[in-house]
Length: 113
Length: 114
Image (cartoon, each protein chain N blue to C red):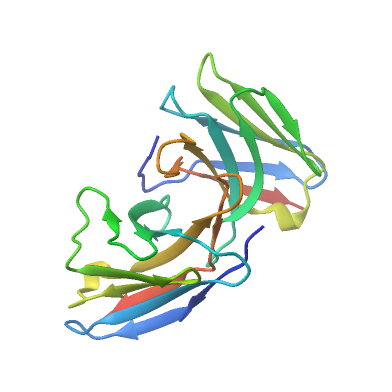
């Protein structure tokens, strides 16, 4: 669910490696999940989404996995590039419930050359 | 996805003054828009839901008389921070829902109150 903290979890990976960013969500009634990328000083950018009737969805270089049993979501980025450096947020919503998004705390991804 | 713009991108104002932030949907008619604030190194916190032609719905703890929201058309919502204080300094982001419940966000407005 919504999380407030002064220290973002960080993940450092080598350029070209794959990265996995994890997120635990709070509401078992949530049925729609989105991953966003936010670069410094900019608004969040939509990456990929998944509905609760799926457990995996693939996009270009990204894959989202959903485990409803343990309320866990992950974002896999293949062959990371310097441009992937950003803060990544997961967000959950109950599609029939006023469309309000609840954001996770975020993870800062740093790509090392 | 939807294209969302915000204006201004940065604003500095003095304590006690009011500041208006505009959020425009450039290619999508949005009956609902959302306003968030984000403090450094923190996540986005929903402030209110802006409904076209009706009153905004505020989240718990957000003062509706301090953060005035107007959603007069399907492409424009405004957030006015009234009687600004330094603690109102933050990054304000608007969002709108696309065709399938996904949300798209504006580039954000950095407000600094001196």
